[in-house]
Structures are given as C-alpha cells and as structure tokens.
Image (cartoon, rainbow, N blue to C red; front, top):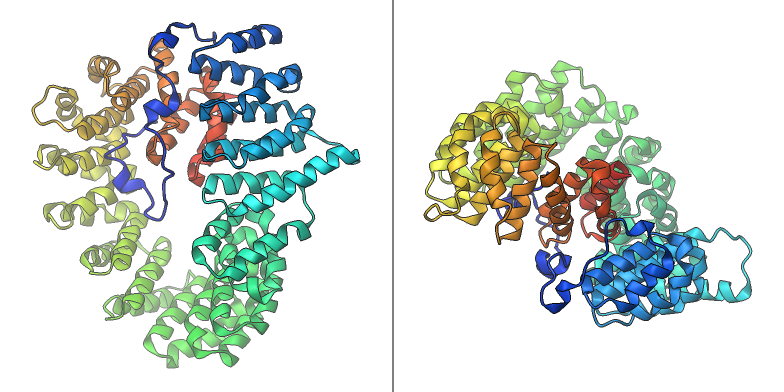
Length: 627
C-alpha cells in the first residue's frame, strides 16, 4: 500500500526521527526526463538479454542521464560477469551527476572480488559531498569483501583491505547516519582487528559530546547482536561504560550476552552509571534473569535513588527470588515505590487477581500525582498490564487515559495516547466520545487510525467528520477510515465526491487521503471509484497520481495496464522525502511480487541506505517477495 505524503505524516512519523534532506521525489527519482536528451530511447526492460559489449557500447554513447543510470544497473546485475566493464564504471565515479557516481559505485561493488583493485577509487568516494555517494562507496567495499572468500590474501590485496578499514573506521563519525551505517556494515565484512576500531570509538566516547556520540551509538545499536561483543569490551573501560550501556539499552533483548559484563560494571560504577546499566538490563528483560541476585543486593546496599528503577527491573526480568522484597516494599514503602513493587509482583504472577487489583488501584492513584515523572510512569505501567486485565477494567483504564490527553505534560499525554492504542477495541467507545471536543478531536482521530480494524464501530462518527470545515480534520478522519479498511465500506459514497479536483477549496491532502482510503477499502465497495482514480492517475501532481494508480490497482489487481503504470510510479516514490510514502511504496511493490522486478535496484538501495529502520526492513521483505 502507499500512503499520501501530507496527511499521513502527522500520525505516523516518529517525532524523534530526523529525515535526511533531499531533492523532491520527482527530481530525485529521475523518472521523467525532459529536454532533448529525453528523446533518447531508454534501455528496454529486457536489457538482461543483451550481451555485455552491447551494454558497454550503449553506456559510452548515452547522453540521457536516465538511460545512463539504467545501463549502469543492468551491467551491475551481471555481477562477476561484468568485470570487463570495470573501467567504464570507474570512469563514471567522477561524473558531475551524483546519481551517476553512486550507481557506478554500487555496480562496482556488485561485481565483487574481481573489483578489489578499484577499492582506492571507492575510498575516494567516501569523501564525496553527496552522502548517498559515500554510502554506496562504503557498501560496495563491503560487497567486494563479502564475495572474496579467500582466507589467505596476497600482500597487495591485504594492503587494500587494510586501507579500507582505516578509512571506514574514520568515517564512523560522519554527519550522515546512512554513511555511518554503511561503514559499519562494510567493517563487519572486513572483520578488522578490534584494536583498529577501538581507538576511534574510544576517542568519540572520551569527547563526551552527545552530538557526536549519540549518532555513532545509534549506528552501533542498529547492528543489534553483532555489536554486543564490541560493547562488552567498552563496558570494561570507565570512559566508555556509560555510553556502551546506552547502546545496549537500545539493542534490548538481543543484547543478552552482555548481561555478565553489565553485572560486573554495576560493582564498579558510580550511581549515575549504575542507573544506565540497570536500564540496559531491564531492556534486555527475561534473558538477563541471571542478574537477579545482584539487583536484589544492590537494592539493599546501593544508592537509595536507584530503588525505583531496581524494582522496575526486577519485574521486567521476572526475578522470582525478589517476591519477599517486593511484598515488603508494597507493605511498608513510600507510595511510588509501593506502586512499582505492586506492578512488579503482577509481572511475577499475572494470574493472581488480588495482586492485579492492588497494582491497578495504586497506579491509578499515582496518575493523579503532582509529579510529572510519577504520572508518566503510572500510565506506562498500567498500559503494560492492560493485556492481562478483564474487559471492564480495560474500559475503565480507557476513561482514565482519555482524561489525561489534556495533561500539560507532553510525555504524559503521549503515553496516555499510546495506552489507548494498546487497549484497542476496548478504548474505541471512549475515544469516539472525544471527537466531540475540539481540543481532543485531532488526537482522537489519530488514536482511532492507530487502532485500525478494531475501531470499526467508529466508522459512522468518522464519516461525519468528512463535512468538517477544517481540511486537516477531514484528512485525519479519512486516514482513520483507511486504517479500518474494508469495514469502512459504508463511507464510500461520501468519499467519492472528494476525488474531484475541481471541488471548491479542496485541499490536495484530502484527495491524497481519499484515494488512499478507497484503495484500502477495496472491492467491491470501492469499485465505483476506479473511473475517478484512472483520471487522477494522469494528474500533474506526481504523488496524487501515484496514490491513485496504487488505489486503482488495489481495487482491480488484475488490470495489467494499471500494473504497468504502477511499478515506475511506486519506484519513484521510494525516493520521496516523506518516510510514510517510502514505507508504503516499498510494501506495495512487494505485494506486486515478481511483476515488480524492475524495482529491485531501487529497493536494494532503500534496504541499505534509508535512515529509518522500519523502511529498510520493509524493503528487504519486499525484495524477498519479488525474488
């Protein structure tokens, strides 16, 4: 599926994510050549049947940038069979067009071991001003080493790989996250000696500049379990211990192997570092159960300010030995500690109705605390327990969370919204009532959209919002209907008029959302929309045309002409600035299966380079479907 770029973002884009700046999708995708060069014929989709000499001749003669890119990709797909074209590709690494440079670098890497002599040319591209070029250069070096399965290397080749390691390590502090990730992936293939990597990373840690450290840590955490041995070594050094714990917290359960090192660090660290180490154990969860005895001892002997997080972690790890301690805190501790201990007891024994009732009562009381942190923690704890509660209690929680949406604290009302989403269908009645209040109307629309299918009971009041004067409200209501999908079929008659581009005051975002919604509802209810969508597919608004052709294909999936129109449009959408569009385009191409094979190069790039992990994962999954 593909989502509209304007209306969808406010509900789905994580606030903490910074999108990479780039060109508009139409320009970046290079899908609509213009001017004299556009008259040159693009390589046929059957270019794979052409012999390499013919492709090289066409590449040398090409004056159309889009034809050049396609020819480079066709050569790269030959992998080791394209070794004779290496001089052509290396020559293009100095082209003025950055797209040509990164496509050339990528194809050099795809050739594999036979391209080892071109590592110096790729290393030059690591310094390129365009981060995509640098990203592809780093990825290409990794591809070359991955293809090179020799265990004993000649001195010259070993020297090339050593130079690559040095420069890739130096680029780990690059300002662009895509470059950092690509360098880390390449280093994993090169398997450097830790002593080659650690000085640079330790230098970053020693600088204590979060602006430098956090991007590097995010890239390291993105490696998951593969980064754990490296981070365990950092736990042994005071200057890296805190930041290593932060990265392990981000990795979560996959960092289970770091448990012994975290326990050792607890014994040596000051309280502020112990806090982060305890949080890392909590993020690992039950796989860190072996730390239970040490955490119980630390509660008795350590800094009192750590007791709350220790109780929380004992619950996360489900440390059965902690039951006597938890019971004592519930009976004699301060209210906040007692509430946390009560929650932890439920984690140990979720079937105990008495414990559940006690924890819920204490946490509901804490929701009224004057302290922001206490309210945030209470909402999170109640939300965590929700899955084990009966329907009546879940509905009562929904009412409490709804009342907290107007809390002055962003953290509180964001947590309350997340709690309502987690309650799913049991929260729908309460959330629907919030639509009547202008203050809570927009949050309620977004919550219903996040709940999706289980919010089917809200279709009628959502449909009523289509008449709202505020186009933002209209767009959000339509997106909520889209998230509900087929059960929103009753809204089709109200949606169809919104596709009319000539409608007075009609916002583009509303048409994007409407086309998307009709595609989500699908046949047979949305079949009357096909004629409208076919017209919009010819729109000068590229994104509207993309959404329209996608929606029409969802309603009529066997329409071959629409399929031929959809693939290039969705491929172009993979380079959109908006993350939701890239995500939905990647998923939609995967849904087309082998018919979308022309999109493979663009999906491979997305899978390697996109700054958003969920988009990279979606691209990889779609590649598997297409192949």
